[in-house]
Image 1 (tube, protein in one colour):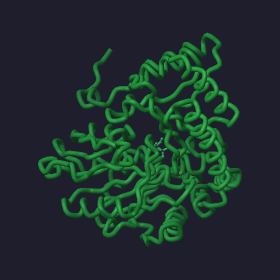
Image 2 (cartoon, rainbow, N blue to C red):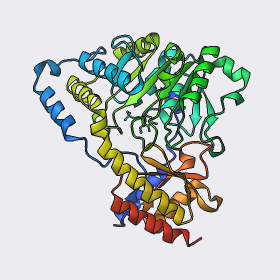
Image 3 (spheres, rainbow, N blue to C red):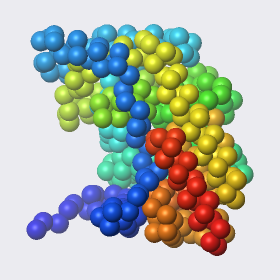
Amino acid sequence: MFTVSDRFQNLPVHLFAEVDRMKREALAQGKDVIDLGVGDPDIPTPQPIIDACVKALQNPANHRYPYQAGSMKYREAIIRFFKKRYGVSLDPVKNIIPLIGSKEGIAHFPLVFVNPGDIVLAPDPGYPAYITGTALAGGEYYPLPLLKKNNYLMDIDSIPANVINRAKLFFFNYPNNPTTGSADLNYFSRIAAFCSKHHIIGAHDAAYQELFFATPPPSFLQATNAIETSIEFHSLSKTFSMTGWRVGFAAGEASLVAGLSRIKTNIDTGLFLAIQEAAAFALDHLEELTQPAIAVYKKRRDIVVNGLNKAGFKADMPDATIYVWAKVPKDLPSMDFAKKLLDATGVVITPGAGLGKSSEGYFRISLTTSEERLREAIRRMHDFSRTF
Ligand SMILES: Cc1ncc(COP(=O)(O)O)c(C=O)c1O
């Protein structure tokens, strides 16, 4: 038995362990568990993307090391996507790097730019990789609360001067997981101005960018001068139901992209070329490939939000993402609520307390389960809500 390093010891702990244990126990007892916890699409990857990958697999040139540069086909498809969707012109070599899923890019990024003692600003609640990457780099995480009264936007005016002075990097994520909050270009321009003024790197996590039900969310790179100070992490995981393929990319200022590329050269050897070809095909057919899934999620969203509100829960109607964010009834601690709900009904939700300090009192439902099962889960939650 060996002890882990101090640095590893400092990584955030897994707060869902108890809920996971209860879920396994319920399954072992033969209970009918409905898991609304994880955001992993149940919808299969669209067939044309699979076909593009199968074709690419037949080409022996794709069997070799991809290296960081990856395939120009993928980079050029990313450039076309940025131009068409956001009106932003980028250079395929200087501004783009393929990622093995956006998580690795996010987690590796602080290692390149954060020194021990530097502060990393990031949302609370937030995707755990912001904190993991910061901890591995020896940086200090400064949480920016996402509160309903602020429409889940971070209050950048409240950051103290002594924190700003030590801040090197600023992670943020809209459309947001877990709160489902959205940001407009005005808000992004304020963040971009803040980053420019204080010489802080802006790092936007755009994982849910293309799964929207109303106005298309802007890219952070559309904000004035953002391209000079920032990087944006994109993921094909949820957009095209490709979580298992591990494919994403980062787009941004040349030295930030070069830094990320340099660390990846030292750690991995790039993203499988056949997957890059399939990803290029997917981006070139964005609208036609995402519309069917968006229609499914929209229907599920309406069922869940309306059902929860009817049952007496207070749920927000999201404009984007694959989640619903709702208030825990009767000010119960969210972890207690999650356990009681699972115990009484077999329904698994994500308690806000497991995602951050500011999200206590809330819970998240993932829309990655069939309409029929979602209806059944809501029915059980309705009955459960009457018991207290
Ligand atoms: C907010 C957010 N960012 C990034 C990711 C990482 O996605 P992937 O590594 O699959 O691209 C996720 C996945 O759940 C997420 O929710």
